[in-house]
Image (cartoon, rainbow, N blue to C red; front, side):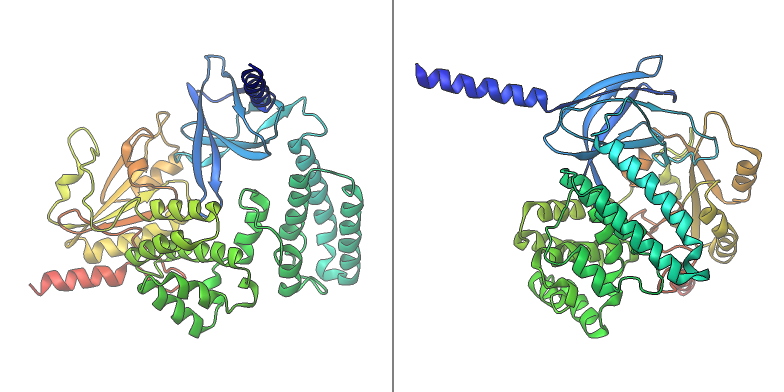
Length: 468
C-alpha cells in the first residue's frame, strides 16, 4: 500500500511539474490568417525547424496556446508568408502582437520577418533583459563607432569602458543563458569590429571557444561559431584541403576529422565534429564536394560523433542533402490550368525561381536574356514566381514583363515551393530531356565564389546536341 501511495505521489509531483513548466502565450496578429504554426530550432547548422504546435486564429486575429518547456529556448511563429520569434522561459506568460509592417517586404513564402511587440513583460524575463541589453549596446556602438578612425585611442577607451560597464551591470545576474547571450553578442558586435588594439583571432578563440562547452541550442553561441568558422575549409592549407577532399571522396570520416584536428582551433574533438558538419553543409551549397559523397561521409560521421546533438545535425544534413536528389524525376507539377511540367519533356530545362522585388534577381535578368538568346534552342528556360492576390505594383509587373521566356505565377499553396525546397531567391535547377534532375542547385548565370557560371554547362549541352 505504501509503495502504491509513493508511486501515486511521484506521478502527482511529475504532473504538477509539467504544469508549472508550461509557457502560456496569448496574442493578436494583424495579418489575415486562420492559423499560426509554432516551431523550435532543432539545430543551428542546418537551421532545421521542428513544428511543435498549430494554433487557430479567430476572425479578430486573436490566438492563445501553451507549450511545455523546462529551459529557455527560442521559438518561431509562422503564417504562410511571415514569421516572428521570441524566447520562452519556464512558467512564463506572454502577451504579444504581430503588427502590420510596410508593404515593401517580399511576397515570397516565409520570407518576411515581423518584429513582435510585447506587453507586460516581467523585468526578470529573458526577452526583457535581452531587449534592454541590445538597445544599450546599439546606442553605445553608434556613439563610439564614429571615433573608430578619427580618434582611435578614444574609440579604444570607450570600448574598454563599455565592456567594463557590461561586466559590472550583469555580475550578479544568475541566468546562465542570458550571460552567455551577452558574452557572444559582445563578441559578434563589439569584438568583431576591426580597430587598433582589437582582439586578435587567437584572442577571440581562446576567450569565446577554447575549453568551453559547446552550446548547441544557444542561438548567439551558435551564431558566433558560424561566424568564426565561416567558409573555414578555404582557411585551411592547400595540403589539408586536398586531404579533406580525398577523405570525403572515400567517405573516410576518421581521416576527415584527423585532418581537421591538425588545425590550432580544432583540437577539441566535439568542436571539430561540429565544424566538420558546418564544412559539409557549406559544401552542399557551394558544390565543393559531390553530393553523393557528402551523403556517404555524413552517414559515416553520424556513427562516430560524440553526442546526440551532433547526431541530430548529421540526420538533418542528410535530409537536407536528399531534399531534391539528383538523378530523380521531378513531379509533374501543374503550372497553370492547361500546362504541366511534362510539357517540356524532350529538352533540357533551366528552372529559375524569381522574386520581382529581389535586387539579386533583378541583377541577373540581363545575363539570363543573353543566355536564352545563345542557348534557348537547346535549353528551355522556365521562370517560376509567386503570385499575389492583390496583384503586382507597376515596378514589379515591369520586372516580370522583362522575362520573355515561359513564366508562371504560382500561389503560396502550390506544392512546388515545398517539394523543391525553394528557400531563397534567385534559385536555379537544371533538368535533362527526361526531366531528371541533374543539378540542385544549378549554377547561376552570375559567378559564384569560384567564378563559375551556368554558361559552360549550357555550352557543353549545346555542343553535344549539335554534334549528334
